[in-house]
Length: 193
Image (cartoon, rainbow, N blue to C red; front, side):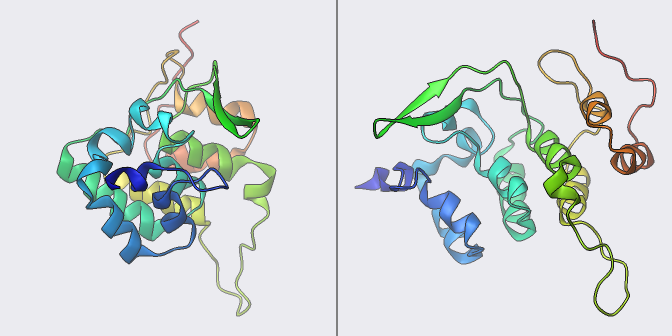
Protein backbone atom coordinates (compact mmCIF):
# COMPACT_ATOMS: atom_id res chain seq x y z
CA UNK A 1 0.00 0.00 0.00
CA UNK A 2 1.51 3.29 -1.12
CA UNK A 3 -0.02 5.19 1.81
CA UNK A 4 1.93 3.14 4.34
CA UNK A 5 4.37 6.06 4.43
CA UNK A 6 1.58 8.23 5.82
CA UNK A 7 0.32 5.72 8.40
CA UNK A 8 1.11 6.13 12.09
CA UNK A 9 2.84 3.38 14.01
CA UNK A 10 1.53 2.28 17.41
CA UNK A 11 3.46 5.09 19.09
CA UNK A 12 1.68 7.68 16.92
CA UNK A 13 4.71 8.51 14.78
CA UNK A 14 4.99 8.40 11.02
CA UNK A 15 7.81 6.55 9.24
CA UNK A 16 9.43 9.87 8.30
CA UNK A 17 9.44 10.85 11.99
CA UNK A 18 11.08 7.54 12.92
CA UNK A 19 13.78 8.15 10.30
CA UNK A 20 14.41 11.61 11.80
CA UNK A 21 14.31 10.32 15.37
CA UNK A 22 16.70 7.46 14.65
CA UNK A 23 19.13 9.67 12.75
CA UNK A 24 18.87 7.58 9.59
CA UNK A 25 19.54 10.00 6.70
CA UNK A 26 19.37 7.27 4.01
CA UNK A 27 15.91 6.18 5.17
CA UNK A 28 14.81 9.82 5.49
CA UNK A 29 15.87 10.56 1.90
CA UNK A 30 14.17 7.40 0.64
CA UNK A 31 10.92 8.32 2.35
CA UNK A 32 11.12 11.94 1.13
CA UNK A 33 11.54 10.64 -2.43
CA UNK A 34 8.19 8.80 -2.29
CA UNK A 35 5.63 10.60 -4.49
CA UNK A 36 2.84 10.27 -1.90
CA UNK A 37 4.85 12.21 0.65
CA UNK A 38 4.39 15.43 -1.38
CA UNK A 39 7.08 17.14 0.65
CA UNK A 40 6.18 20.58 -0.67
CA UNK A 41 2.73 20.28 0.96
CA UNK A 42 3.50 18.19 3.99
CA UNK A 43 6.90 19.28 5.28
CA UNK A 44 5.72 22.68 6.46
CA UNK A 45 2.04 22.80 5.58
CA UNK A 46 -1.11 22.28 7.59
CA UNK A 47 -2.07 19.39 5.27
CA UNK A 48 0.43 17.25 7.17
CA UNK A 49 -1.52 17.67 10.41
CA UNK A 50 -4.05 15.07 9.39
CA UNK A 51 -1.18 12.63 9.88
CA UNK A 52 0.91 14.22 12.63
CA UNK A 53 0.90 17.16 15.06
CA UNK A 54 4.26 18.42 13.74
CA UNK A 55 5.63 18.80 10.25
CA UNK A 56 8.80 16.82 9.50
CA UNK A 57 10.86 20.03 9.58
CA UNK A 58 9.39 21.06 12.93
CA UNK A 59 10.07 17.56 14.26
CA UNK A 60 13.69 17.57 13.02
CA UNK A 61 14.24 21.00 14.63
CA UNK A 62 12.66 19.83 17.90
CA UNK A 63 14.93 16.77 17.89
CA UNK A 64 18.02 18.94 17.17
CA UNK A 65 18.74 16.65 14.23
CA UNK A 66 20.92 18.88 12.04
CA UNK A 67 21.45 16.29 9.25
CA UNK A 68 17.67 15.83 8.96
CA UNK A 69 17.12 19.60 9.00
CA UNK A 70 19.71 19.99 6.23
CA UNK A 71 18.07 17.25 4.10
CA UNK A 72 14.55 18.62 4.63
CA UNK A 73 15.55 22.24 3.94
CA UNK A 74 17.33 21.17 0.75
CA UNK A 75 14.24 19.27 -0.43
CA UNK A 76 11.92 22.12 0.55
CA UNK A 77 14.02 24.67 -1.30
CA UNK A 78 13.91 22.49 -4.43
CA UNK A 79 10.12 22.30 -4.18
CA UNK A 80 9.79 26.06 -3.64
CA UNK A 81 8.25 25.65 -0.17
CA UNK A 82 8.38 28.37 2.47
CA UNK A 83 10.38 27.27 5.51
CA UNK A 84 8.93 30.26 7.37
CA UNK A 85 5.39 28.86 7.05
CA UNK A 86 3.26 29.34 10.16
CA UNK A 87 0.72 26.88 11.41
CA UNK A 88 -2.18 27.70 13.67
CA UNK A 89 -2.54 24.06 14.26
CA UNK A 90 -4.32 21.72 16.59
CA UNK A 91 -2.47 19.53 19.00
CA UNK A 92 -3.06 15.85 18.34
CA UNK A 93 -3.87 13.67 21.33
CA UNK A 94 -4.63 10.00 21.64
CA UNK A 95 -8.09 9.15 23.00
CA UNK A 96 -9.39 5.57 23.02
CA UNK A 97 -6.82 4.52 20.40
CA UNK A 98 -7.92 7.37 18.13
CA UNK A 99 -5.89 10.48 17.28
CA UNK A 100 -8.03 13.54 17.94
CA UNK A 101 -7.14 17.17 17.09
CA UNK A 102 -7.60 19.74 19.86
CA UNK A 103 -7.83 23.31 18.55
CA UNK A 104 -4.97 25.52 19.68
CA UNK A 105 -4.62 29.28 19.93
CA UNK A 106 -0.88 28.87 19.48
CA UNK A 107 0.82 29.27 16.17
CA UNK A 108 4.30 28.10 15.37
CA UNK A 109 6.90 27.64 12.70
CA UNK A 110 10.11 25.57 12.70
CA UNK A 111 12.31 28.53 13.69
CA UNK A 112 10.09 29.47 16.65
CA UNK A 113 10.04 25.84 17.83
CA UNK A 114 13.85 25.85 17.89
CA UNK A 115 14.00 29.18 19.73
CA UNK A 116 11.45 28.12 22.35
CA UNK A 117 13.10 24.75 22.96
CA UNK A 118 16.55 26.35 23.18
CA UNK A 119 15.18 28.83 25.75
CA UNK A 120 13.38 26.14 27.76
CA UNK A 121 14.87 24.72 30.97
CA UNK A 122 15.55 21.43 29.14
CA UNK A 123 17.30 23.35 26.36
CA UNK A 124 19.52 25.06 28.90
CA UNK A 125 20.66 21.75 30.37
CA UNK A 126 23.67 21.67 28.07
CA UNK A 127 27.41 21.41 28.66
CA UNK A 128 28.89 24.53 27.08
CA UNK A 129 32.44 23.25 27.46
CA UNK A 130 33.63 19.90 26.11
CA UNK A 131 35.67 17.46 28.20
CA UNK A 132 38.86 18.87 26.67
CA UNK A 133 37.93 22.44 27.65
CA UNK A 134 36.78 23.72 24.23
CA UNK A 135 33.62 25.81 23.87
CA UNK A 136 30.69 23.97 22.35
CA UNK A 137 27.89 25.43 20.23
CA UNK A 138 24.39 24.59 21.43
CA UNK A 139 22.68 22.06 19.08
CA UNK A 140 19.60 24.31 18.75
CA UNK A 141 21.88 27.20 17.80
CA UNK A 142 23.44 25.08 15.04
CA UNK A 143 20.00 24.10 13.71
CA UNK A 144 18.73 27.70 13.83
CA UNK A 145 21.85 29.05 12.13
CA UNK A 146 21.32 26.55 9.30
CA UNK A 147 17.71 27.69 8.96
CA UNK A 148 18.85 31.34 8.88
CA UNK A 149 21.39 30.60 6.15
CA UNK A 150 18.63 28.98 4.12
CA UNK A 151 15.89 31.57 4.25
CA UNK A 152 14.45 31.58 7.75
CA UNK A 153 13.45 35.11 8.71
CA UNK A 154 14.55 36.14 12.20
CA UNK A 155 12.10 39.08 12.00
CA UNK A 156 9.15 36.90 11.03
CA UNK A 157 5.81 37.63 12.69
CA UNK A 158 3.37 34.92 13.67
CA UNK A 159 -0.25 34.68 12.56
CA UNK A 160 -1.17 37.07 15.41
CA UNK A 161 1.42 39.61 14.18
CA UNK A 162 3.74 38.90 17.13
CA UNK A 163 7.46 39.01 16.25
CA UNK A 164 9.71 36.08 17.09
CA UNK A 165 11.86 38.23 19.37
CA UNK A 166 8.89 38.95 21.63
CA UNK A 167 8.22 35.21 21.94
CA UNK A 168 11.80 34.79 23.21
CA UNK A 169 11.64 37.92 25.39
CA UNK A 170 8.63 36.41 27.16
CA UNK A 171 10.79 33.39 28.02
CA UNK A 172 13.39 35.66 29.65
CA UNK A 173 16.48 34.15 28.07
CA UNK A 174 18.97 36.99 27.53
CA UNK A 175 21.58 34.74 25.88
CA UNK A 176 19.18 33.86 23.06
CA UNK A 177 17.96 37.47 22.83
CA UNK A 178 21.59 38.57 22.30
CA UNK A 179 22.07 35.84 19.70
CA UNK A 180 18.92 36.98 17.87
CA UNK A 181 20.02 40.63 17.89
CA UNK A 182 23.49 39.63 16.66
CA UNK A 183 21.79 37.78 13.79
CA UNK A 184 19.64 40.70 12.68
CA UNK A 185 16.52 40.66 14.85
CA UNK A 186 14.85 44.06 15.02
CA UNK A 187 15.35 45.42 18.56
CA UNK A 188 12.36 47.74 18.08
CA UNK A 189 9.90 45.00 17.07
CA UNK A 190 6.66 45.21 19.01
CA UNK A 191 3.48 43.21 19.20
CA UNK A 192 0.67 44.56 17.02
CA UNK A 193 -1.63 45.07 20.01
